[in-house]
Image (cartoon, rainbow over all chains, first blue to last red; front, side):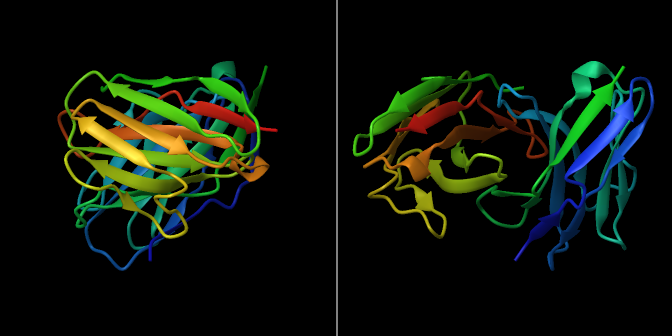
Length: 116
Length: 115
């Protein structure tokens, strides 16, 4: 069974600094996808970035990048130049691309607080 | 990206009643997913809804408690039946990206409180 582990319940960062949110995963599948989502206090889930298991380059989307280390089964999210609006819960999730149903398995999340 | 709306955005219900949540997508999608997020917890998949077939439920979720309808390719409903305080959660619907499998989007969620 797939499992996502986020070991940081909370992280603090000062505005304009970079921060790394950790995510490790466990799967026996060769083909999978990794997602990161942001959930502000309003409750919506905002899709940030995706990394496929066969992607050779780390994914980037604006200030978000994914540090993908396949051998270590880690997919850490790096947020550069943090902004106050980045304060939120962040969830890492995995999807098995082999199954017919595109189910996402989520980690427990990391609460990020950006201070001025 | 897909635009997903949910109704209601929040509700407060009495124990023993039911709540039906609607999910509308701005484009046709094959599969729609319903997730639950209990207070302070992560998201858990309730079921996957394919148009024209019965929904597929995850372990721990049953059709009698969470009946789902999927009448067409842009709409689905989730009913939470016989409500108890333990059902107080955020319920979110989700779809894949319009153009590729490497995106998955969520609706704004329905925040349910059961008294």
